Length: 494
Image (cartoon, rainbow, N blue to C red; front, side, top):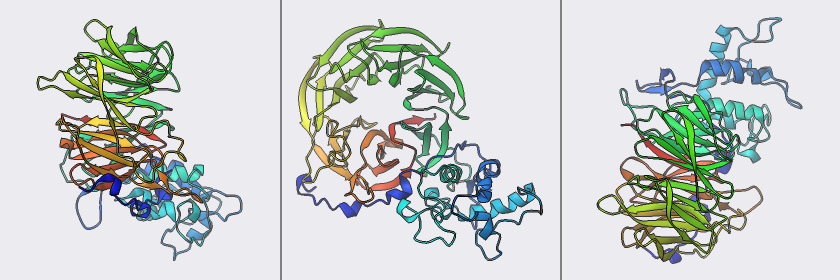
């Protein structure tokens, strides 16, 4: 592999039309949606919901928008590809039968393979907002934040991807959209969003019951832990917490959810999953930003930005047993195990450091720091991330490699384990602000697809998830998700 510093940083080579992907939000679509047949093959596909279409989308076609003719005014003409039925005289809305015919016309404008690129979304959207060059009906939507455009985008994102008949996916990638109220669920078999959970404003951490029946989400806006039914996405209970939460973790037996409390002096709230009640709060060294349970389930480790400390709690006694102080704020962490499953090392990202610290778990001490390669043209300043140049770190499922994100390089790096030698890197998509040079997608968190063959990265500045081939370092998919995606995690349904 060529040395990273000698690599040509050709910005246009990783171009992404951000207008298409940045703001398209998700539709509330359960995985149990009714299938329909797609064209020439008999594979099933998830159809956009008709009831939602009639209640929320169709009225937009009759709406009077300031300075514009109604969609209805042009699209009742017989020569229109997108054809709307003529209203019955004196009626202000279509009959159910007319709506069904309108629906059949509308769904022809949806790209099932890539819903966010559907003509229904891009044709009436202003070009400077990512739309097509010309629409004879004018620029109906000046931006992707127009509430009506968002409503249509929500619905369009229900368009399915053909699936193998009789197949039953066993893995899902969950993405919490930290500046929105949605959680996107990606099927790694198709790299399409197959479910979107609504109703949790500012979702942060996410964890799963071992059997996959429940999902636990820290809700920053309400300072609660939301307990959800996985299949329906319905919130079953809200558990009140000590204060505003950040990230969470769950014990391997699924009996306790640990919630990091983002307020001084610092606590880990413990929620019993049988009773769904908070049972205790464990004091730790500083307000908790990120929180983990070690792979063997014996310890909880919290990281504090304000106190620049990592705190280790024995989960048998719920007592602090040791900690490490750093010279910078503590950011994400991940763990390497010994052959017997016990924890060998922690890899810790820090503020104002482009790389990571190595902590020997047995010695209770930092033993090394690894600097990431610094590119000749760096990012971070325009994005306001110079204090957090590297965010997102994870050990692969088989334990043979460590992946580390970099905003400065707009890339993710792969190191071999246990020797920590740089193997390679994957370049990530750029964001193209109007009138400004390209900026980083600001990669935030990392998780893995089945078998660790693919790496999933949340691009917090681009509203997308990059899917990287772990061997070739090539991006094989870019999945549009919600607003400022951050925490990303894998659920394996056994």
